[in-house]
Amino acid sequence: GAVVSQHPSRVICKSGTSVKIECRSLDFQATTMFWYRQFPKKSLMLMATSNEGSKATYEQGVEKDKFLINHASLTLSTLTVTSAHPEDSSFYICSASGFEERPYEQYFGPGTRLTVT
Amino acid sequence: GQQLNQSPQSMFIQEGEDVSMNCTSSSIFNTWLWYKQDPGEGPVLLIALYKAGELTSNGRLTAQFGITRKDSFLNISASIPSDVGIYFCAGQRAGGGNKLTFGTGTQLKVEL
Image 1 (tube, rainbow over the protein chains, first blue to last red):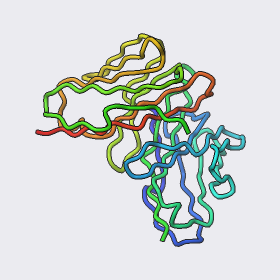
Image 2: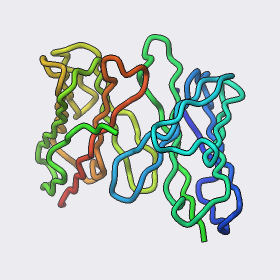
Image 3: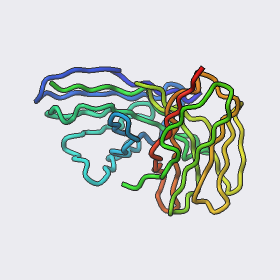
């Protein structure tokens, strides 16, 4: 149990275009989903927290107009990188939590490698 | 943002050896989690700890929630080549809601 998928696993886009990344909880209902960014050989950096049906809460320094997050259902959250630039190239990972008895356990997707040319 | 201090930063050990790594903080944490991340993949949850002093095992892995609630330890016994990867501790901080704070990571390399 507690499987999270992400799509796509890898994407290359041109500077100025937008890219959407999907995160799905496959076998449980995710009341909360998290989006992280990870640079090579670095730890995970939390970008935002989203609860189903409400606006995402962004971490300090993360532009909410650039990184649009939608959590429309209990199994799906999307991250849209708008007007992407080369500096947005990174590994983006989502996680989901939703077990009442284990509220702080987060289950991660496999990640999405974004390259902006 | 705040990160947890993990040590060692990296380890190069022989197959069959036992491994220890730890995670420390200046803040109190209510929950400690240990994850393993393989290259190009998302982290996988290994062990979750909920009470100060708690000692929990998962196969060859054993983790402890420090009594002070400011640290946690992970031990791997009889390491094998597939233990290679980066291990992250993560904590849910008192007053921090349901967000996790992640450690800086310990990279484990196993020599055959």
